[in-house]
Image 1 (cartoon, one colour):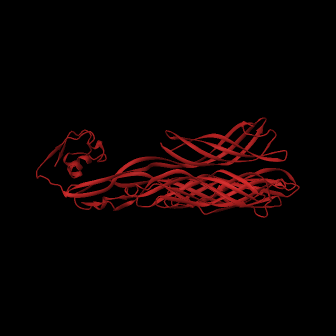
Image 2 (tube, rainbow, N blue to C red; image 1 turned 60 degrees about the vertical axis):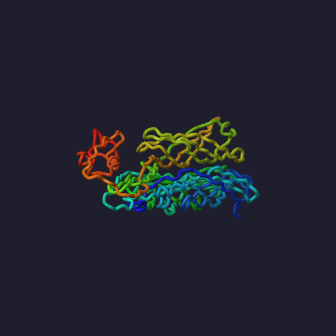
Image 3 (cartoon, helix red, strand yellow; image 1 turned 180 degrees about the vertical axis):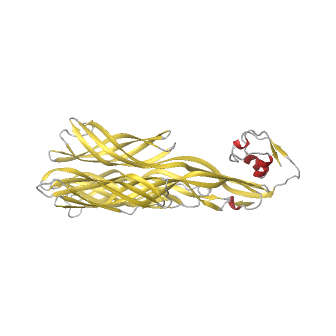
Amino acid sequence: MERYNSTLAGGYMQIPVSDKTVSTDLSGDFTLPDYQPEIKKLLRVTASVLPPSRYIGDGEAEFAGNIDYYVLYMGSDNGIYCAPLTADYKIDVPFDTSELGDNGYLGGFTGNAVIGADMISGRVTAPRKLSIKCRLKARAEIFAEMPLEDGFGASEEGIQKLNCRATVNRRIWGVGEMLRISDEMICEGGDSELRVISAEGKTLIGEITAMNGAVSCRGDLYLKFLLCRDDGGVPYTATRKIQFSQTVAMDGMMPGATASARGTVSEMGIVVEDGRIGIDVGVIIEVEGCRAENVSYVKDIYSTERKAENKYKTVTVMSDGEEFSGNFTLSDSLSLDDANIARGSKVIDLGGVVYPEEYIFDADKCTIHGKARFSLLLEKDGEYSVSDVELPFAYRLATSGEFDRAACDAEIISARARVDDDRIGIDAEVGIHGSAAKGESTTMLAEVGFGEEIGRERGKIVICYPSGDDSLWSVAKRYGAPLESLASINSLQRSVEADSTQSLEGVKFLVVG
């Protein structure tokens, strides 16, 4: 029997093979630079994960990059200091490929991971040394590129093909070159030299436009500085917002596609001179895109001359999908006792992380539930401490269709806290970006074999009484009859797909010549 299953037609279709969150633990020992004061008391450690490079092979994906730590501590002179440190990370994401070869996944793999830091802790091991432990979480999506067949190499006369067209979605990823942003900020006057204890930056990209081969991004860079004067006094924060724009090249992007974008701040340079803060910041923009594409594939095939033996495969495709991004305000309050804050404390600084946890779909709406964990730097009577507060949130967004799955990541762009009597109130601006999709199972032809010739009796006419599950295609295939000839003999109008039961709606019998 001659078998055909290797002729590639019109490209590839993305098939999701893995969508999961994995974690890995990092640990390392660090020594402060000589110009940093010794550590008297460790206050907190925060982290910024830079976008990874990625390698995706057969059964395993690897994502690797750098993580920047920011260590806030009280020095031996009772002043507050911040030490920036850097480490490498690597996350392996295995995925099952046992069924991929049999199903014709022969075109390689694509994918991406959004990585964030969680559960960071530090421990002082010597006056200038500390160890840091950090758990990284990666939301990883892996897709196989499945070749689409056209005819399966069968070119003889009498071949009947059931070609199907479908609209599916394709995920695309891109990372821009590092964008340098420079600015200057004038600070309040004082009698002594101004010192920048720490600086951090967050981005909120509010305007995202898909173009041919690129995505245009416009947004704001939110900078926050923890400042103090050399003559003492309680540290305070100052903020700055700077607009920026960048066009990120992305192969396969086109107008009408949807996209989401996030920016990571790196290589921050700060210079203080004459009460002015000179700013030079690097921003790396990551873009995820989703576009609809029309594909054609062979759903079934038979011959009017020889018996056929077919094998089929069932695959899950993204029948619909979109990227989304937005921002919302999280406001809540709780008692000082619940927040473990001593009365009389002053909030010096506030930051935190966001954890989306659950997605609830209702028609064309999606509600994202999660929690935000805030870290408050407090001062009371010259002593500094840190308190952690956790608040729930629910964010409801409108979608363009009815989806059944979603994934996103979020971050706190800016936040402030206020103490009123025996309660503390927190207001935070949260940026969110992710994707929603709908998966459907589709059956298509995997392999066909043609064997012995079909014997026919000359002049014989067969009358077929179709069942309710029959279609024009199923009857033609059953009797090895040419599809168009069967339709013509029975005066059937081809207004619907041949494999639809509606193709024989109202038909009581068929004449098969």
